[in-house]
Image 1: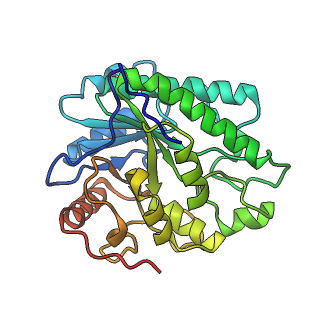
Image 2: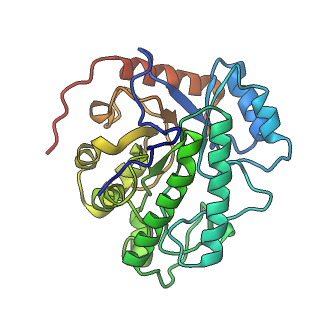
Amino acid sequence: MRRSLASGAAAAVPHTPLQSIPMVFVSTGGMCGNTVLEAVETLLAHGLNRIELSGGRYSETLQADLLRLKDVAVFQVHNYFPPPPAPMVLNLGSLDDEVARATLDHMREAIRWAAAFGRPSYSFHAGFLLDPAVTELGRRIAARPLFDRAESLARFSERVGLLAREAVPLGVSLLIENNVVSPANFAEFGCDPLLMTGPDEAIQVMENTPDEVGLLVDVAHLKVSARTLGFDPAVMLGRCENWIRAYHLSDNDGTCDSNDPISAESWFWRHLKRNLDYYSIEVYRRSAEELADQVRLAESILAAPKPHAQIH
């Protein structure tokens, strides 16, 4: 059963309607050829001042550099940010105590950065049933024995609750992003090797974590996972609606998470909540001008009344 941790603390509150124009961010995740600061400065030069910080290269001066831009930009901290001095894999579902400790330490630092930037949330990916090597990230991960699913899910939920209790006094809530399982991943392992790819586990985690924990739904992850696992993606959006507090927006062909541009015909628009303060364009391999067009498209659609969604 859910409960709030807010009593007697500076509570992290769920997102509420803030303005007529939705807050649409642009992710730095696809700008890997630049340093974080270069990516931010490029986006700002094109009028994109709502920036989701994701990944990048380590810099000792990065926080000070970004805090100097706090008056002209809104920064949202996501997952593998701030980039650590040495590359690592984040996995709150790990059964390896060292991996779990390093993940918790990174996320505690990210929560402190979110608080410093004045944002009410930090978002991160759900856990995995294995600990891939850093060199395997973004590439094929070969089959290997997996963690016990129930134990990994229980430890993941327990660690999320621990982080939530530490984040509340800083005014920060936690948002968990659904994982993506592709047909190739499923064929390699003969099962789903990731947590929270579908609605049942997402709901289970939400029901066993505090009220200050919500969902960031990546609609591109959802499209691929739904095809792989054989469920209707609109059903997950409907069943999880009460917990959804943010979205990642990109598109693909349903077979892999390719971070392609969104369009007015993308499948998900009619199913999205319109009153959130965190939507992020996670489109890669595009110029800043093209990303600005993507933001304007999202803003125009999200500002319009929500059409009736038909879920089959």
